Image (cartoon, rainbow, N blue to C red; front, side):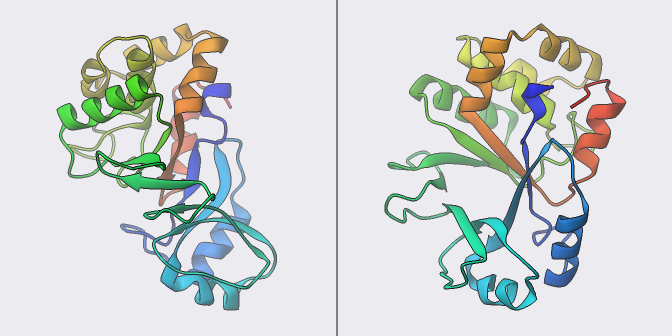
Length: 216
């Protein structure tokens, strides 16, 4: 399914998984699926540690300040600051010339819906992070959002509708039916706006998709 292709960045270094660098790299090399972007999220202050542990080239998004001279580390984007012409993602209501970024833990349903609606209205691409590990709201525990909820909410917002209902939907069958109704043009527009999300678990997202019959 084109909607889910290249959706998940590898955030194995970050909580709650917080894998050691060697373990995170080993998992990154061993887990392959079309839902995964192949991008490894790394704090800027751990780039030297990453370099020491590397066994070959790797595509990364760097979180926060930090640089490297290791040409095996291919920095595709930065998150948290504006580094000139390189693509960057910034949290908050005023990301400047950067793309947007929304943290999906500790955010209310209304605020997440509002963020998505503003991104759609301003045609500002964004990515999501933190707490978006499972497909459906509540599958990771009370208060946790689902990646299908965010996808459907984004589709609603692009069409001029309200995102809140999709954010609050807990019935997987409803979300799956909404996903299946999307046209190819809607999917293209949706994924232009929502680039990816970071997950510390790189297996569960596609296992959930398979369980719901959303083959990728």
